[in-house]
Image (cartoon, rainbow, N blue to C red; front, top):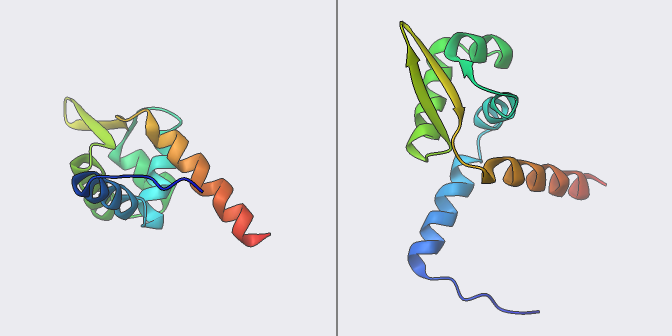
Length: 101
């Protein structure tokens, strides 16, 4: 097996990515957003979270630059900001199926 050389700064970034994906609520929000741009209220309704909890999780995802926000009048719409998110989600899902088989 080949050993990867990964710099410490890159390890820290990787750990932050895994930490961002470690919460089921955030994963659910990302899964919804993979379907397209959505506002906070619709995200809350679809995820079963309160609007406040949804906003909190979106703030974490925004800080990680996983999502971006766009204001339209009083409404804030969110969308996936990183093309790698879908790949990460698919790989994590496949891995979970492998663990459960």
